[in-house]
Image 1: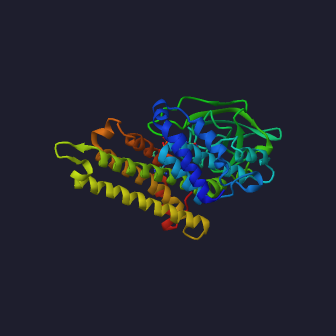
Image 2: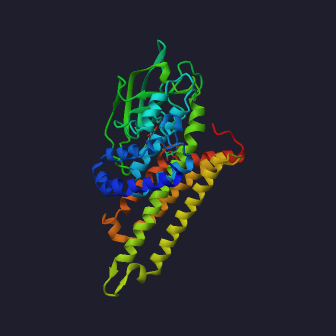
Image 3: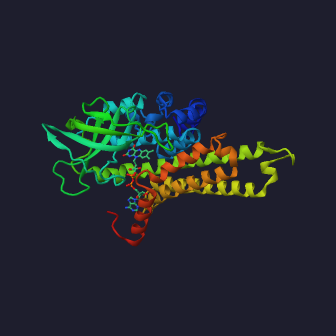
Length: 381
Ligand SMILES: Cc1cc2nc3c(=O)[nH]c(=O)nc-3n(C[C@H](O)[C@H](O)[C@H](O)COP(=O)(O)OP(=O)(O)OC[C@H]3O[C@@H](n4cnc5c(N)ncnc54)[C@H](O)[C@@H]3O)c2cc1C
């Protein structure tokens, strides 16, 4: 499938499967298995996997465009998709000793959803410093951990779990493991009742002496930190930014539609015709949205052709995206007045969903800290 065909397919699924169910799934906090099935059947779960395992062999440009298209209809599904692509990238980058071929084939065939289980109750948003430690268990390890939020909890077929290496000495001497959903000791530890992204099942997950065999150890001992930084973070920041872009585009569209249809009958004018201040605020939303799109494009360009400033762009794009989507959806709330506030429009959902981006780790504050340090030549960790 080409880049364009993948986006077309994503738009079809967004319009046909995601959009009609988004409001209801948000209200009920209901994970959309229909959406994952449709994405799987279209081959989009294997968007960046190589053709040898049945993947589409497309790059970050397609991943970002597909994610943004999904987020325009339902940001919960778009975040589930982003986390799946992160899990998949971790599996695809596994060390040679890991047995990953059958799982990658299942992902490409649409039969396997993955996700990341990095954040822990003990180290909170500092996911690079897990407090859990894997223990030697024959040839493999066993892991006990309290993972604080795991997108697609209870719905994914695999969880990419971080834990300190059995003999690791430092706080970031961690290893990545693949833990399958049926592993004894793995359980969803509570409900998910978020303010936003309510349909993405980001519940806590507990691992209690979960056995993991050597063939599912994805990185060498203590090499998980490098995989987090080099494999996961660039794509995760891009995916988060694409979710934010979809939210902004949806907010602009919904606001414009409201300004074109809601009327002051006593003036015989629509809101948009009557009030220049609303037109100006809509224009600001459009400028912010297009600025984010341009930054995302530039980040993709940096990922496709790496250079000295690539890591800086990767850090900037998530920080900017979280704040842009909060700003654009907040303006939409104001412009659309009581209609937005009273949930007559989808804008209130977009506003709630937009707030997740800035608190998902690495958080917007941590991004700023990293950007500042990197500009001053101070080591990030
Ligand atoms: C919808 C949703 C889905 C999620 N999905 C996943 C998932 O699939 N997998 C996963 O592993 N995790 C996931 N998470 C967890 C997420 O990545 C963060 O770990 C979590 O949101 C952090 O919340 P906290 O209360 O622990 O933050 P805290 O660590 O308590 O942070 C509190 C505040 O301090 C700020 N702060 C922290 N450190 C610094 C610093 N060094 N400098 C400046 N400010 C700082 C933060 O920005 C924040 O504002 C998800 C979270 C949400 C909300």
